Image 1 (spheres, rainbow, N blue to C red):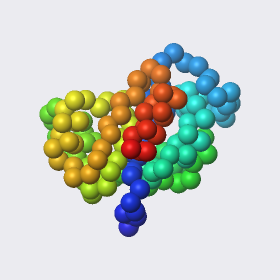
Image 2 (cartoon, rainbow, N blue to C red; image 1 turned 135 degrees about the vertical axis):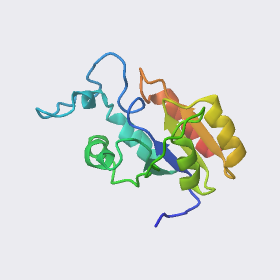
Image 3 (cartoon, rainbow, N blue to C red; image 1 turned 180 degrees about the vertical axis):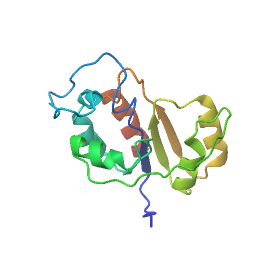
Length: 159
């Protein structure tokens, strides 16, 4: 059962925001064991501390599903987080395939959605369909989450 506390939710995607698609680089100096997904070395481990400092409840909103807790959480130093379960649907249209599920999961709580695929269609639909406040924050997938993104998110959460 979800904890419907008064704190906002932060829905967090992995590919793009945490694993940027830019030029390969080791962002944290982290060395991964042989056979590990080579893209994981693009994760900036500082992001875990930045996320933990935000006054919100973190929730995985990624196609990684439970693997985000097994693989990504330990790299970022995060505890096991709730995971949004995606409906089995072939919806087509202008909305992102996550949008309706995130609004349903939030159930009226204020939320931040951090993703690299958010569009104006998603923003308009959430504004019209969600009874709480929402910040749909699009991250540049070539850069991933950075300090300027956290400044924006923290300011919204403080307001």
